[in-house]
Amino acid sequence: MSSGPVLNLIFVGDIVGKGGRNAVKALIPELKKRHNASFVIANGENCANGAGFSLSCIQDMESVVDVFTGGDHTWDQKNFEQEIRSLKNMVRPANFSTMQPGKGWSVFRNPASGEVAVISLVGKVFMKDSAYCPFETVEKILKEIPPSVKCIIVDIHAEATSEKAAMAWFLDGKVTAVLGTHTHVQTADARILPGGTAFLSDVGMTGGQDSILGRDICDVVKKFRTGMPTRLNVTEKNIRLDYAVVSYELMTGHAVSVRAYSEFYHPENM
Image (cartoon, rainbow, N blue to C red):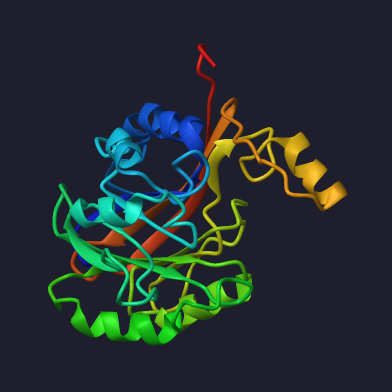
């Protein structure tokens, strides 16, 4: 029995620095055509010089990205707590304190058809202790999303694979996809859970291929070897864009496929 049209959306892994932003701007239009995708979500919490967001960085990419999600580095840039107040296309972790500015979830119009609810969460295992329970938080949010919104995408920005997997199974059948971010390492476990929820432990990153999580190799090795404070410069060349494509039924919001991909960006002037 047909469940109606199937739509595709793209989720981009953690964007690191100017090189990551340039790769997004250069590659996403073609990737949307290739995958017949009408909606793009990107975790951008490292887009401002490798740490946090800025209004100008979001404006730099908003022509090709519909929604930006955050993480534990959301407030690393000192002015962003003011800048986020004017943004309609940004969701920071919903389980941050309610006293912090910005929204933890919102509903967006998909140009192809229907609406997409995007929820940003941050994990607690091996992460900052100040965040509230992501499970309790998302449970409350699901009660607030209008029943007419069938597609719900959850970005779980977390260190532990077990916590991400637990979130996916907890939400199986209740949301379209649970996609992990934060580790900058794309995983090979993309699957559809029994209830129709797509899951991928980590989408990966959009940053330097020849780097350590987007940072200069020598800087990172020095920090590990010496244990001394070291400036970790962002690698801006030979950029790899990691992303996932989720296909879902418009009428039900159930995912029918999820696949992880990587694409390379080699600008001539870098």
